[in-house]
Amino acid sequence: MRRVTLTVAAALFMLLLDGSILNTSLPAMAHALEVRPLMLSAAVTVYLLTGAAVLPLASWLGERFGLRRLFVLAIVLFTGASLLCGFAQDATQLVLARALQGLGGGLMMPVGRTLAMQGARKEDVIGITALLTWPALFAPVLGPPLGGFITTYASWRWNFLLNVPLGLLAVFLIVRWVPRDTQQPRRPLDVRGAVGAALGLMLLLGGLDWTAHVVGDRAGRLQALLTLAFGVAALVWTVKHLKRTPHPVVSLAPFEHRTFLVATAAGGTFASMCLQATPFLLPLMFQLALGRGAVAAGALLLPYFLGNLGMKSVTTPILLRLGFRRVLVGAGAVNALAIAAFALVDANTPWSALVILLAVAGCARSMLMTAINTLMFADVLPAQRAAASALSTVSMQAAGALGVAIGAIALAVAQSAHGSPHLELGDFHAAFLAMAAFCALATVSFWRLPVDAGAEMTRATAGRAG
Image 1: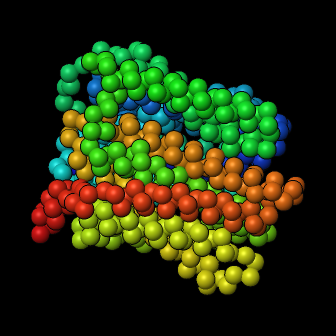
Image 2: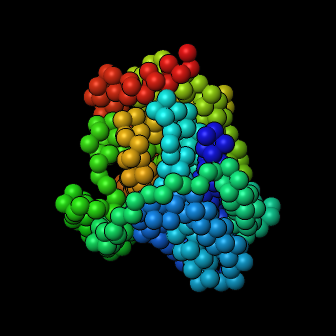
């Protein structure tokens, strides 16, 4: 079971790293392909949209073709598309290859999580989730500096070509270590639910991404907000449909459990927004407001990364000792204070104080994300895990896009308040305070959890350890 989980985690790390490594390379890619950088933003957006389109089908496709087979096919598609991206000769070829890459990536996350959870006992879920969480912790932190380093000292094409050996290795390990699926009963395809969910997610995530890019453009902002509104309307209709139909493309049964509801649609969403927005805002502040170079800004994230890494070895014992509610409230409060403290950073901040703050923020981020991702499956029944994986993936993607969009909006609003054509340090301070407020809201939501939330899982895990 551990080998299967590690293999899935490695494949997901490749996926999430690819999603975060590209932004720092866009200027060099645009120069090499002889287009404006703005034109290449389509390579980011189309990846997001095609992944959202296929995501609602993950559970149904897994039942129809088998989880192992579908996961392998998704990795092969993602890897082959990465090769096409690396050899793209113009912007059109790159965007089309990124669309294929998004299709594979949209399936990899939910199918991989379900594959790792398949057949797991309740006492194993904490350990499995801890291993599956590390890609989401490290990839957004490592991606931007790694992308800048590769682009500066090698070629932007290697950002994609590196996926080829990693993908082939993942396929080999899955075929060797992951057992074949047992035959599952086949459900009819809920076409209306699949189309409604795909359309809603594409409009919602596309609108959020659009909003993050046009916050200073009134006409573009209106169009982005309309896209968001249509996306929300489509998802509301889809939810009503999924509740009525006898064979929904994605079951909403996991939401019957309060722990899953809080970890995805309530406090977990607010917390994930902050956890994804902070690695987005920090390197921008270091470069645009504090005058650091791309490589130096990436190096400044090292204490943040080490805090994430160092906390991983103690997350499970802390959860077992303190329980979910205490850990979520404590880690949420520390994370909110740490994010707010970035609003005090300026050119005169001592190096030692900045390093300590980054390390503390990294530790709190690691603990909070692991606890949230574990709480999602605390009470979910084994038969509901496939649906829970799809729904939690939707929640994480929407929260990440929302966090980046709100961070960008906060920067634009603060910038317009003082009328400067360039972002200033105070603009970033305002953005960090906004993110800290959302993390505080998440902490309040966690505080309202029952004291014994997830206790059955922690007792089972502690009993096995004892």
